[in-house]
Amino acid sequence: MPTESFSAYSARLQNVLAAADWSHVALLADDMLKCWQAKSQVFLCGNGGSAGNAIHLANDFLYGIAKSHGGGMRVLALSANSAVMTCLGNDLGYEHIFSEQLAVQGQPGDLLIALSGSGNSPNIVRVIGQAKTMGVKSYAVLGYSGGKCKDLADIAIHFPVNDMQIAEDLQLIVGHMLMQWLYSNRPQPH
Image (cartoon, rainbow, N blue to C red; front, side, top):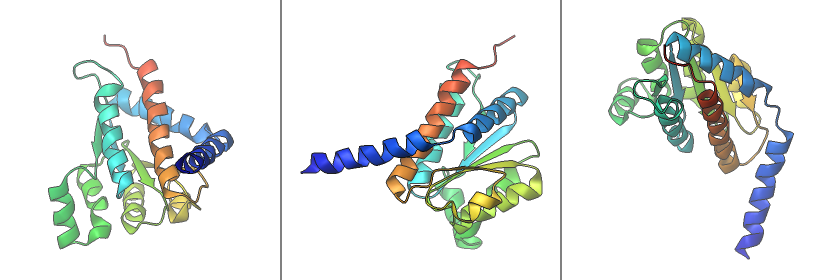
């Protein structure tokens, strides 16, 4: 019966949410607000479903947190431009598709949010390493064991769940929590 499967999925998601420590999300919220106020850039990236989540959340942070002309955050999903990604993947290798973009566009004081189920994707590991060389603070939203990124990122938001779909659900849940909090704390125009 499908409803049993759906109930089990819902229960797994609820259990992870109930056990979560939200303190690192609070740190990310504060850092994002500081970036917004300073007009620094926020970069998001991920592969597959996480790439889609990065694009979705970039939209939310560009417009959804302000709902006013020009009032949103400077944000870029590194997974959004297929021409850039295929060029870099072809010329340099897939592991460089995010780090090369960050190397060109990032500045000290910017913020990187890497989304990864496993935390072991070579292009995610490499972009976090690139951020470290540039003074770009890195957060990683991770599932499973957290992989290499759990220790490599400046701050890991880790959900120890061995389910890729739930790990990807949690990326959006964290993003939407941030979106609503940022909207409630948006800078007021002068």
